[in-house]
Length: 74
Image (tube, rainbow, N blue to C red; front, side):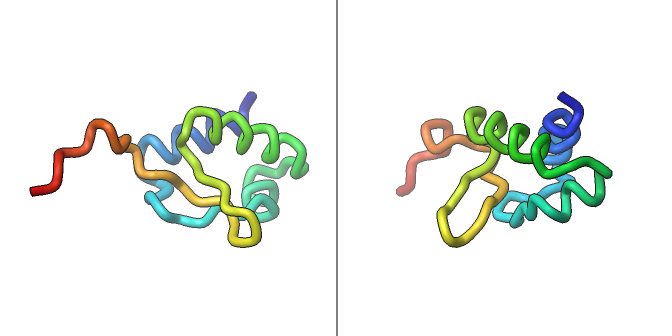
């Protein structure tokens, strides 16, 4: 799945920053695809916890570090 791979790579390499909003229409236009493969890629990225979906607010890049691996607060 090409859209998935492009978005995943952009997140993991830092081209998309944590907290950055992902706009499906913009991604579809930039990659010259319909919105359907973008929606499918977003579902897969959400399963990997690389993005977070907030209803009524949007889709955002998640932080790469998981909470369980973060240092404990003092």
